[in-house]
Amino acid sequence: MPLRPGDQIVHKAAWLYYTHGLRQDEVARRLNISRASVAMYLRKARENGIVTIATSTELFASEMLARQLEDRFGLEGVWIADGNAYPDPEAEVPTLGASVFLSMVTSGQRVGVAWGRTVYAIADAMAFADLKDVTVVQLCGNLGAPYSYRPDQCTMEIARRFNAKGLNFYAPLILSTEALASALRAEPVIREQLAGVGECDIALFSVGVADEDAHVVKCGAVTAAELRALRRQGAAGVIAGQMIDATGAWLDCDYNRRCISADLDDFRAIPQRLMVVQEAAKLEPLRAALAGRFASHLVLSRAMAEALIDTPAATPA
Image (cartoon, rainbow, N blue to C red; front, side, top):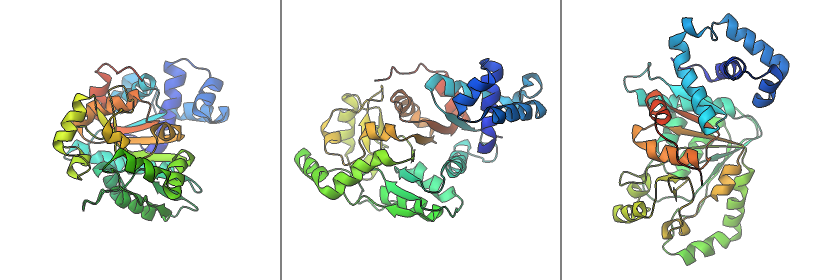
């Protein structure tokens, strides 16, 4: 069973102190907590047997893997769904992601939300919370296809779960020409909304595949033939509707220049960015997103975590 999100900091403190050999004051600075809290967490780790690896192998195995992923990819937090509670291990990921995301959001924050099946599944699994002065904003333009996981649907469902204000993006994700997209970005309302992405405190997103099963194909933003051409140009994944290459860099292509979405540098400037990856088919785009430093926090399945740690990482852009 994966640990509850609230218990992860205990394991992280123990990992930094006992495995990395950091002093308590160094652990406190790394985790942005007080030294007294570090001492309390270390005591709790000893009392619960967390640091006695020989006698708690099953409990610590996935947590050790999470710490390894944090160290390797420079992540602040990783949660691994073991899938013990579900016949399909991947089915546990959105539930865990919903719990983690709910624990991260606090009153008064501005929350950016991307889109896709995983994001909508997180919204559907999320408990209701009566937070104060939370605003949930859509990070990219919309799609006309009748899917529940459209950008506007994902944004408004999460806003409903938080009892928050939702701000939809009333522009298409993809325009027919670069000139039209450029003109639309210059419109005051659109320009203001795009500029506000960097003001978000936290973002929730997944990374999409760049193949014929991509949401952007199924929702009509791009044809399968156009997607194959983008693959030949180096497309390896999709972030907020935009194509990135294997190093996580924005792909300089006609499709991206016609896209109405958050500037990816502004996206990376959001302090907390929770990426939730459900499907095993997303290993390549996951590696690309991590190479591009899009995520600060990550939720994924144990199988995906093991595959990720066993493959060489791409060189960041």
